[in-house]
Length: 119
Image (tube, rainbow, N blue to C red; front, top):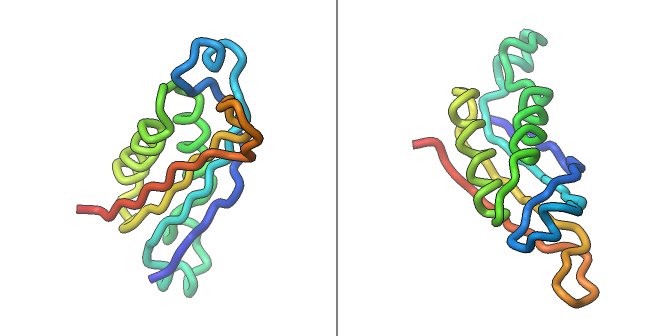
């Protein structure tokens, strides 16, 4: 088995419960870790034998562009789509962070972390 990580995927999105968040938007960071079998691709050196991290990044960016009130909902959509499109993925760990959230204090980020295993 093996792990593929995409770290610090940066997005500008419009998530949040406040109307101003829907209009103004905010910076977000996504960290993704997937578990898959890397034994074959480590021998064949063939992209078809692994999980393409370009595909993973594409899913994250597309789902981050769909507005949600809660980071939990965005994370759930990303995880569901990865499992649906990439059969070789057996586990997903995902962190979605809103940078400089409008919560009336000096907070660098608010992060929701999710972990799911394929059924």
